[in-house]
Image 1: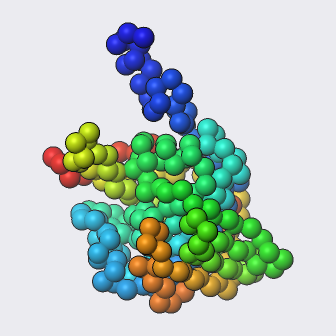
Image 2 (image 1 turned 135 degrees about the horizontal axis):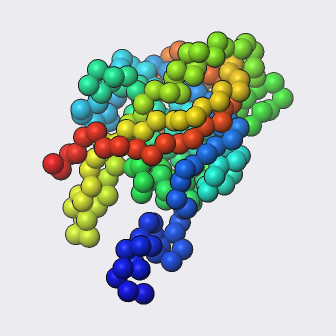
Length: 245
């Protein structure tokens, strides 16, 4: 393989069998359980990178079931998204994500900078309750419950929340271990079809873990919960701040 062929094929690793295909990445019947809770403002200040600014003391804890995703397959993910502002614009900073499928781990980290780690999240209905659980190895680190479809939500504010920008801290090291890429990335969900949204009583519990420290943003008070189903496309990102420039 000559140099021109290498350059032509150089999309993702490994060269001859990339861990994920090129996009676009379309999701059908993507199901969310989002529990909004208040936490310690000092803890938020320790993890939100400037120039992002925390928008209060709230965190969104999410379970996302993805049964049909182009190129990535059938998987589930879970993690924390922190409401922030960037240059006066509201959005969400993706702080932690855990999932059970290699292609979206590789693609998410390499393309956008999603903070993805391998774990075992599950989102399912247990009789009258929507239940999300997250195990890191053999250790249960999160349990979320919500009454199943107790009350339908107005579609407009739910759709607006899905259309808001999200932010990621993309970090890629050089071969000597120093930072080669350190960028703040912004992305949007696109072509969204909201199929339903509901709310109900909710509870959320964390357990400390050295390598999955979601409990370092402790639950102080449940603010609300949303269960929704949508079709959408995960848009590619843009760099809005370069830490190495």
